[in-house]
Amino acid sequence: MVTALFSLRERGGLRAQGGSVTLRNFKDSETIVVTKVTFVHPDGTRETHAGIEGETVMDCALDLGGVGIRAQCGGACICVTCHCYVESPWSERIDPPRSDELEMLEYAWEREPNSRLACQVVLDPACAGIVIRLPLRQA
Image 1 (cartoon, rainbow, N blue to C red):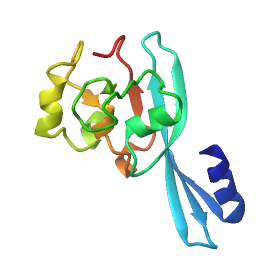
Image 2 (cartoon, rainbow, N blue to C red):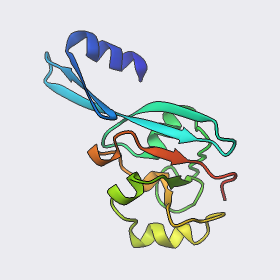
Image 3 (cartoon, rainbow, N blue to C red):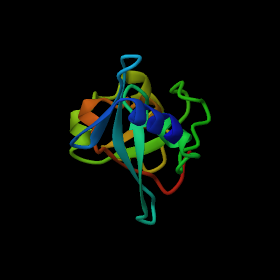
Image 4 (cartoon, rainbow, N blue to C red):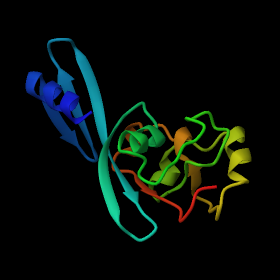
């Protein structure tokens, strides 16, 4: 992922705005918006990475080797192994969970009001700089 982003940067332009960066490839008229995603581990360790808008928080985590998210169902919303906590103010900015996600969250370990399945949180402009807290264990 990093190599592709640098090649886009070299061939086009780079624009930063808040917690996101826009990479534009002027040759192919391709635009990729990259947003900052911070994962907070149970021990308080923070990892900040780049996620691509339109992909999910789960995709971002898996691109980085998991970052504490197992995602056994691959994003089909049929398990809770990508359970996470979306910190405020982002939890109020993103779309609310659908009924199938709410049903699966019934099985999440230590569910909180801001519990979400990372496979259902799509990175968009409202997610710029999002902070995702990881649970001590996945189901």
